[in-house]
Image (cartoon, rainbow, N blue to C red; front, top):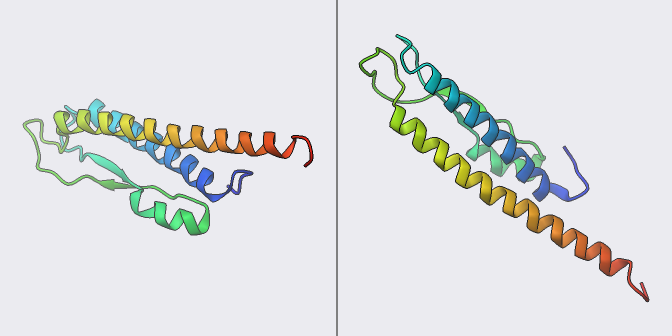
Length: 118
């Protein structure tokens, strides 16, 4: 995903992809709250963000979420899943802010390069 804005922008975009994937998995977990035998899942990608700085790609992985079985005979904790959705939203806001600041910086550089005497 080598973009014009470099590896930082690529990492931020990859983080958004991972966060989006994680929110989809959380939604899937919540929809299976009453499904007997369903094991909650999660997306782990934070560790791969370090690798993304070197390779330019983020590869999130879907894994079984740890936890005990509930009354429905599955591993979905509704309170935990709702908390994850809130956490994801906060991180997404931070990433979007980072993307916005990167783009503002690039815009300023382009304006400076287009100025008189350059």
